[in-house]
Length: 479
Image (cartoon, rainbow, N blue to C red; front, side):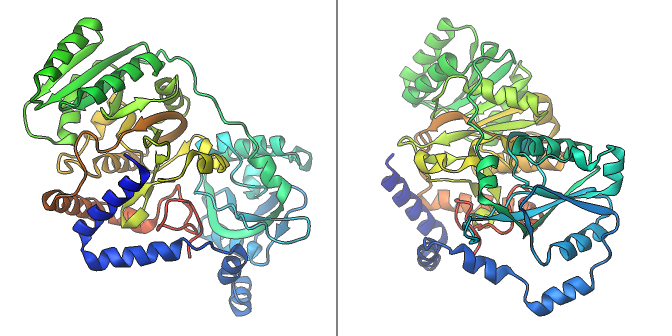
């Protein structure tokens, strides 16, 4: 499906789902959002005026039990000390604080690229220093680690390792989503200069690949072939869940597959289509420790894709891992899910070309997210069953994000693995959401999801900075 065709279909679907007035309002909003934000103007609008700054400083408690550690040449903005003091007093359990920051050029001007990061994410920090060059650290943590001024490194690599040590030992880490420090531009280049990690070749993990299917054997053949040839997982089984196919060619292909490879089994689902129920049914019959839920209209692009997911799942002791999915023409379909996009949840960087995506350093590192799509979702079977699987009340939409939210409540990690890449030929197997009946179902399932997780949506995604917009998928500043 071409990018233009997909946009037209989505526009029609939105029109049928929400009506002409909402469609017109959405079009006007998108036009407004396409205008570039000037950072200097945004920063000025978010600074405290003199009266508010004075009140903040006069009411700030003393900052006796903390020390600000930072690299050379960093500018601390006026409100920083008072802001840190208020937060430290309000949250005595937190032993390390960091804030958002921006960068200045050699002429003293802003570079226009603020670093507005998420709440603390040890997975993200392991890959990249997103915290920056200044942290407020409690004296009790310093004493516990027996730190001296000589232990505070100035170079980028040493500082990054120092941050990982501090945050690993801190009782709790806090984040203030305000620009409180300014760093030299070369620090940005140092922090973001890491090379992209290549996918690992093989994994010994046992994986049950679950693929629901109704006819469409061309897509299924391509999917299975790519998993076997490029997945990088030899210890696997493939469970094809037959879902009311009608074509004789489909059943002939099933028999051929089973004869060709003993690792392939065909399960039969005899009830009507319900994505959640179908996958729950197959998960109960899976024999491996890891479950890979995979749409039949996907294709592994890069060798070692499944191995990349499994290795990161193990490395970070995560419950679930998701991949980067591309549309047929190569634009981004999924790069993790952000809670709150469009009022509910949506895919990060959707519609980006790979060239544009490649210009964003943090997009290429493994990091935690609130959710990932089940078009390609690797999850520990034990945790899947503990969480209750997918909710059958969400037959098509939001069942994967709802499941990930249940994992969040269990304090489990969900990670996005950008170097595990697949194509997703979306809508090839179930059609676009264009009919009135489908539109009504989507409205119903959207309402169920947003009501169930209303508190979490209102609180904001912890892995997405509140200074960033929820109107577009590009991580740009909120207007």
